[in-house]
Image 1 (cartoon, rainbow, N blue to C red):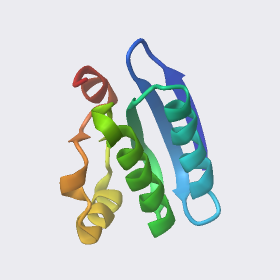
Image 2 (image 1 turned 120 degrees about the horizontal axis):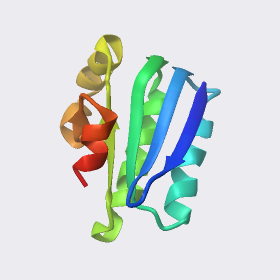
Image 3 (image 1 turned 45 degrees about the vertical axis):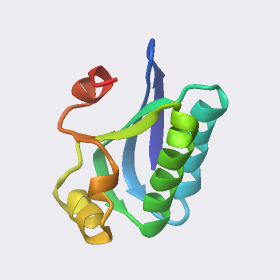
Length: 111
């Protein structure tokens, strides 16, 4: 799994590619936490090139969402959920928790 970080004016964009499983999910969690530690609470995670996500990956995203929303500071939004990944979010009941966009540009613009 690779995480490419891009810091925009008001938003941090994390482009994730590959498999997000038990061994790589901590890398995603660390990338999200680094943005939060830098007091950047508006985060978009682009999952367009993710081929697999495990419960550990879902946990990292939910934890990041909770940290961003704590004290009404920001939000963590998702972009480009592909078929199988979107199904995992639906089966886990997480789709209503996140604001999900078709395009990362649209997600960044929503802040």
